[in-house]
Length: 139
Image: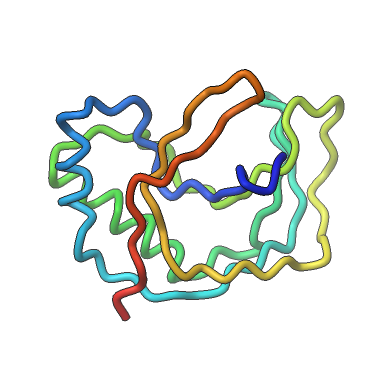
């Protein structure tokens, strides 16, 4: 993975019609969010999509609260999103040949000082991410 593509998805909305983009932003504006540090301390794999990723040993409450608040706000606004359970992870490898069992890694401390609405744009050399709006902490 290229450094500029590393991210943690809080909530996946998929292909959203342009007319709903402002509604999504409005639903998210004013969301109470405090900065925190995320410690990625485990290596894990998903066999089916053949992905290797870093994850926290335990998800911090601030991260879970943020993901839950986003889900609630979009739901109240009637906006579509992927309803799969939140599983915090940062994809590091795609199309891995063999999966391995989960194991501890040297912890990576990721300071979380904002969250963003990001559009993924396919290109000939892979995906490029464009930040449409970022929200700083409110607390």
